[in-house]
Length: 243
Image (cartoon, rainbow, N blue to C red; front, side, top):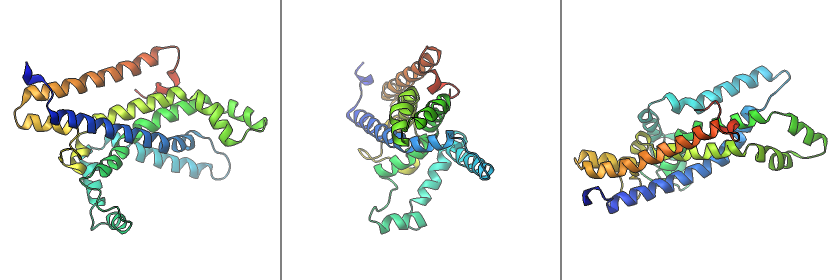
């Protein structure tokens, strides 16, 4: 029975996974909010067609991780982080050093890979609000910040919750990208999914079962919560059309 207990390395990997997912989720919510507002906004005038095409290109780039193999994304990020590449030389020039095989590199790679899981629920939530409330606030003299803070943000709250949960859960379950970018450094880049891979390679199936069971229960609980909200009376706009 003791074979199924978590090892200190397993606990360390779980803690690092939770740390990574938390940092990535907070940063993605900050970055994705203005991006989702722009994607959900309407435009008129002579530049409407050009803006529409630009939005289509941006949406395609955001959704690319949904269909691209994680190892492909990780490979190109690894090249970009290389000291011989343009971005890598820039990072060295500003004193950041190499992002490959570091926790910072994992954060950046995870943000790119989980971006569509945060942006899309926010876009859905903002689209569901419409423009009537914001236009009414504008006629009453409210500025853009006040309109967002007191009208858009409260109405889109279910979408923010859904986006945060999906982004967090997706980051927890990453493997290909984190292995390519972070490698397998204990306490630095060895997250839970990589730790499970190590157990399987070592034929330590009881330990792999114990760690996998935790992630399985967590993933199922997240999906159950999302689908329960879809069928509930509140919060439907934030998740509808996503899962």
